[in-house]
Length: 496
Image 1: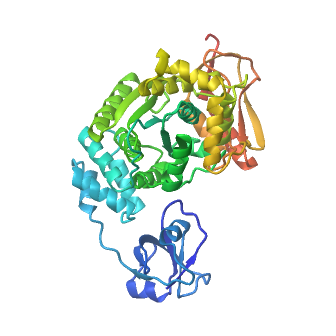
Image 2 (image 1 turned 60 degrees about the horizontal axis):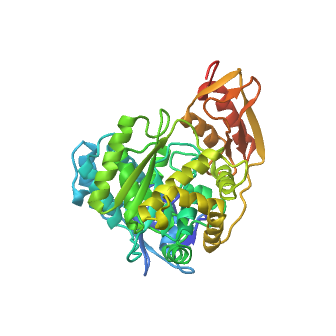
């Protein structure tokens, strides 16, 4: 059958569209959601079939989603053959994990190979993610999964010398320290090639925020050129295929709206190993509505991170931070970009909590790298930020990645006002983030929340608690409705 481009974004999932009466469907017994092997002279792919029942497709045409089209890269009027794929080699391992058995290195390697080769359906992958959730991955399995994720992707070798990296485990709205930290560390002359994920359960990931200002979908060669030129980069990890199995699992985790400690550790560390990092700093916010909710949970996650890092050859440090409230003013890609630029530009109205946290993290990395003259890393980081060197380096990185552009927030803005007078005593980070997501973030880059209160601040009845930004009136209405129905997202009490 002749291949054509459907022009349909199925978010990294390879989909092929055929007419139900075409000869291939009838001869092979293909039905909707059947997995099909597509072969051309140069490429092969397993895709999911969607059946077309009207006359929009000719009987000799197979239409490919964007993900499938990019993977196959067919020439003009190229034809392909279609057949049933072989059963996934990891089917037995997947079944064993679903029933609570412990898997080994070979099992996880088979699962990750089938994941990147598209031999497991999203339903099967969801079963795997669920079977690994909670405490269902032990430390040995976490290490095995990490190694398997690395093995099925590409790896970068930067040669001798330190290669620094920083990652936040997430769960705290705002907190967009990474671009600031990368700019400071790169300005200090150290390599810090940063690959970042898009949002999984949050209103913005670092890649989403950076994409507001520059190109992040660089391939591996382009990423290496940026780092060689500027010491650092901030790119989307999904395009460099450093841990492609993790990117597929993230796609499945997003609608499930959860991940587990074991998968989190494997996800983070597999990308660090693949990116060629030697020393990694983990920012771990701890708070009752953050991803890590207690010191006990933080201790468990820290132990798992440290033990897995040792097994895969990474030097790892954990920086435990305050996760009781958002960091910065903005929640959502554009609003977070506006915050970090204000910090880099040393503006008077820049969020000081974001500035201080970024300086703390950059200082730890510079201490790890070692400083001349006896100065602390924190002091060196502050000097680079205050002098404008970090801003110049950030803009240079953006230019090297394809050019810089100013972020523009959503046009539709509405405040959520206080229903009583008092003091802010608690913030529900998860539900506050949900307001930003209902407003359209991260898919609508300009959507989100501007939230400037901090714990202990006084509030008068009728004053704005926060402002909701949206690109469309409908999404703004959704967010307002949810915020109004959940006034306890922010706890306002008579005493602080």
